Image (cartoon, rainbow, N blue to C red; front, side):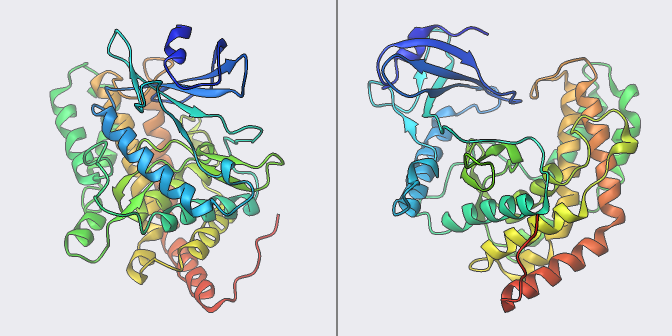
Length: 373
């Protein structure tokens, strides 16, 4: 889509806009790079207010979180690269609402830096785990009030499953017959999806501030591409469980195939990358994680993969309202790929649990070896 230059001019950017180009391939928001005549590039985004019905809540969370993170890294020489910076409108607001009711925001662009779509080495995986662990640790002392829930019950897996079964029964797009095998797959795991929310309800798992979308491409690496410096895409930063972030790191970082892989025999996960993420995350989490939180980390990889598959499948049955698709069965294809990854993770669950607990023990004792390349 093309963007009217006047939208960008509503923000407190460095002078006249010269051009605006699309940036990235995100599922939710529309993102552009804005080039100015008299200063550095900025990033302009149109917030999807179907997904985020209260954009002002999203921005309130983001401003509070980024200011807190900036205070944590202010002593570092490259502090400007270690946290997003919201650019206000010329009226001092965090968003501009255009005449069609669309919400727009602007960030300073982190440049020159690199991002990646797929983990390559255990060392890189270690830095990813450490980065998101540090992100949680830095926000552990964010002052009250509680952050807004920008998407209510975003990671409440039992309600996600209940919604899927309801939509499947209603079958609004007459797609159920093509997805019956996947619906049955999710239904058979109904007994497991309650585990974490039940623990939280009993007070066994503490509420944390979590990112809730810990994909590799939500990290910006240094110019050499060696170490991540900044966490991106803060729309879903809100109260949650640490398992949501860890599980999604494994789902997205360790998978051997694309999220929408058609050839399911290619779908698996890399144990060396799992070990790298685990080590980095647990090293960063020593200061705040509880033993019971660690106990459930391996299971969280299964749960988050299952949940995302459920979300893809629900969106397919509803007519592709949430995720952008490139063909009519794209969300069904995504669900099939995720459910195949669930199978592989379930088969290795005991092995992965033992690896997590061993890594945690070595982390606490200071016996951890540095991850190689």
